[in-house]
Image (cartoon, rainbow, N blue to C red; front, top):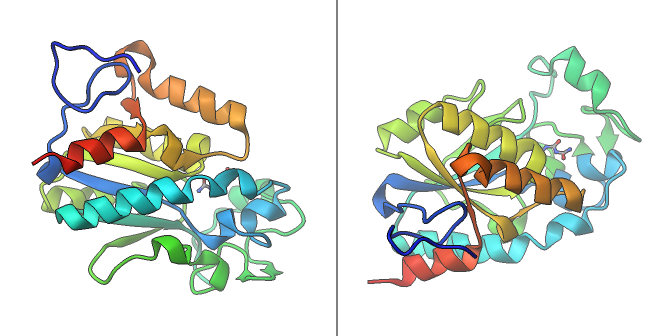
Length: 228
Ligand code: TIU
């Protein structure tokens, strides 16, 4: 990984990330059964969930380090009210495979709050006190109040992990960037059903001098957190 010795921070593309731990939240995007386990929304769209499961280990390690350091952790879940009143017809009509949002599958109704498939996977289950942002869209800032919650805690930087790289992670990073947050994305803690989209999405973040943010690996962030 290329680093610029003149700038201190976490080694990243396109240059080191100026990490300020107490102003930096870990934002774990949509690590839900519906995306990572068989029988959920991802699988219903025809995807192989195994492609996302390699992100679990890096997220477990990052989350543990973040908690140990006493830093801010936010989780998100994509999903809808049981009456689907927050589901735009356009989203319902386009995301259709074997099952549609709201249909009953092996883990309950697809992408509906309160159902088993909507839950965050047990490996990454939120601790009491860690905010869980329920979002009806792909981005974590739309219709959620996330920006206000981050600002209230003095957060200016985000380490954004989770799934999928080119959909909810990317949309969130773009939204955060426009709202003035610096985003660092660890490549191994994000994943896609389409490896080529994963690679391209990460390149899009760091290209053009970091047009949307920085890209690194979880190991670099763990090393930074281990420093005294
Ligand atoms: N969380 C998230 O990325 N939602 C998606 O629908 N992703 C897909 O890749 N389909």
